[in-house]
Amino acid sequence: MLSPVKIKFSSLFRLRSIALVMLGLCVTVVNAGQQSSKRPSITISIVNNSTVRVQIELASPGDRWAFRNAFAGALGLGERIEQFQATRSNEPVPVKRLAPGEFRGEREADTLSYEAHIPPRDTADIAHVSWLTASYGVLMLADLLPEAITAGSIAFDLLAGWSARSSEACDKTHPCSFDDSARQVYFVGKELRATSTATHDIQVSEVVYGEWPVKDKSVLTSATRVLQRYVGLTNFRLRDKPTIILAPMPFSDSTVQWKAETRGSTVVLLINPHANFKNFLGQISIIFTHEIFHLWVPNSLALQGDYDWFFEGFTSYIALQTALNLKLIGFQEYLNTLERVYNSYLSYADGQTLIEASERRWTSSTPVVYDKGMLAAFVYDVFVRRETRGQSSLADIYRSLFARHVDEPANANDVIIKLLTSSPATESFSTTYIESRNRIQLEKVLSPFGFDINTEGSSSHLTIRKQLDPEQKILMRGLGYRN
Image 1: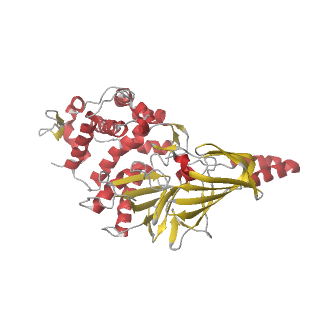
Image 2: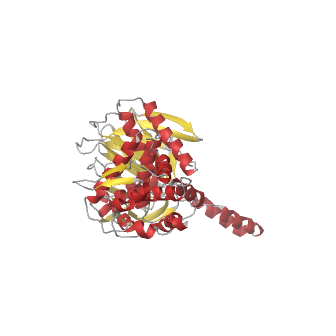
């Protein structure tokens, strides 16, 4: 999930003002500005139940085109690009395929045409890459367009009864604009149902396919409640209109009940049609507490680098707290979840720092980023609450982050570690939990805070001590403990 690139025109206007005394220079600057404003024009057509055809009128001629070949652990994406053709002024340009997803023309071309064969892949990839079925599909421009094409206008030539939506509807006669292909997602299909609402001056859209045990409006209301919570937590209103997509997974996998991806301003939630949810609305609301926070972190930040430990691991803890605060779970489930994460963490070897784990996230077979990151967030939160007698918490880090680093590109790890260690009480936190290869051992850490961990038997058990001192009681009340 990449942050948007913002183009500023102030420098261009300053040059134009200076050049008013020199007519020739003024004309040159204006013409250059007009040329640079031209954007690629793209049309995506449905060929059959697993293939789309893409036609692109380029903004400027070129002779090399490369497609993304890997994303989020999904490999071989370039192999899906077939029938690649190029023309210049309607004359064919011979093209050589250099490698999967890489093409070179014998001379420059101004128009491209190709097919993308995108049947649903395995469960691990389904939320991260484009796919299409006979009835619906998710199209992600990051793996459908050449990497050099980052912005443009897009139209859809669809089958009868189909529609295409992101935050707005698009079709053949009403193209949509996009400014960052890496962040753009479109939901296509027949009989899509779209609704919208507004909260905190944020327009929220929902697009649903399929039949579900709750009303579409209830799903949108649930998502809006979570959005409202995160506006308050970050003190930052989203700039882009968020869209929630709810659809069945295109195949049934008995081992997976749901998959999700938040890209740009779009949350894609795919539910196994045979998922065993005792409380359907409650379960997807809990999913929303994690996925919707990604609209803020990392998607609304200009930070750079591998910091998955923070935007996945810490987000998992924030989501758990949010589920508790919204009464989607009780305090016992809060403890049970932390207990399950700790037992998961203890089940495999860990010899990585959180930063190293982030760099290796998609090549690792263990969920270190999620487990160790979430446990580190928990330790930080209870430590800060105890040190400040409940006056501060992990949430304050996010308010500071959005107050300072929304538009300022910077190294994410440097920025976040600086915030986490900004007080004398927390100055050693990073060296102990983020930059250390040592294991987190909660049984050695949590005792002063009023928690007990029973490590006897095959798994650890997390409980609240029966006798709490006054400071521990303040801490527990702040976390949501009411006994």
